[in-house]
Image (cartoon, helix red, strand yellow):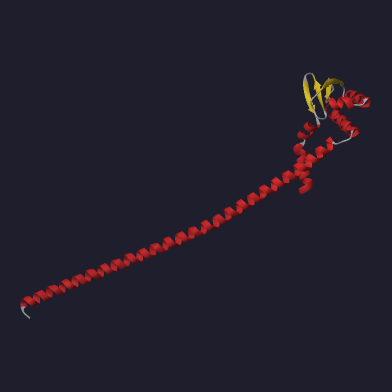
Length: 197
């Protein structure tokens, strides 16, 4: 081999060695990048899987909570409907009393709401027509017992039942519906405790 060929061969060998070194270095760098990418992908995958598990658990909890809220809402509505039915039937039983019971209830209401003043009491047209003299006397006596007096007005009021008391221009609605409405919360509580306690 001549000197020129030796130099040429040496240059080629050095170039090959340098190229092999660069290739090995590039391959090592590529392997490092791939390993890092795999590690990052695994980490991201684990994070996504964990978030997915948490989302699933949260969704199940929200669904269970929503179902429970709907159940409780429907149960409350059913209870309120039952209570209202009982109150409606109680009011209907008041409306269907015979005359003696009805006027007896009116006297009890009067004893409760009459004031120790001079006033006037108003009834519906139907009550004025069917009212007995005994009841009229009982109204006067009840007012007197309270320290006042009541004049039964001939003026008819457009009410279904009960009466309206008037003292000095101030009126007190003592219809059965008004009394019932006034005590509705108290009655609802009592019915609730009877039915559900």
